[in-house]
Length: 185
Image (cartoon, rainbow, N blue to C red; front, side, top):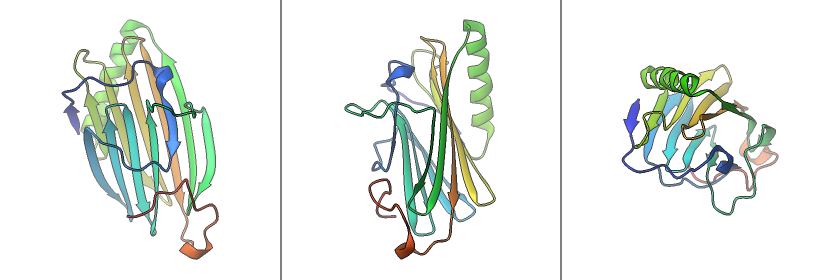
């Protein structure tokens, strides 16, 4: 799904992105709700990048990659940890491209995500290559998503990959439940 957001995006630079787990749902500009083999996933484009909410097996998790005032957690290259009943793995990289390469890559990614049934892409006014895109899928016991955040003024593309393994562990036996897990459904 491709949508145009009618507000300027908040991030000013790829360096402004921060990462967080367990945040409450933030106001979104576009959303896509998916059911992926027993897991409910909501892809959310924020004015300040993205948030993904996942619920499965009576547990939930949220990932936020955005410009978050006051956040002290910069975008990490990689994270691997247990979050409630989930095994969570995250990786990020920043690509700096030439002007021509950036435009071509942006068009390619927007076409890929817009045509995918589990994809959400939002473009922002002012530059046809200013966008946030998310794509989710389920493979076996894992839910995966990829995101792309485009900064045309810098010709930089922030790419993230997340994999969550869902384990059928009773709620009372979960290790690590707490601040990293969203409460509620």
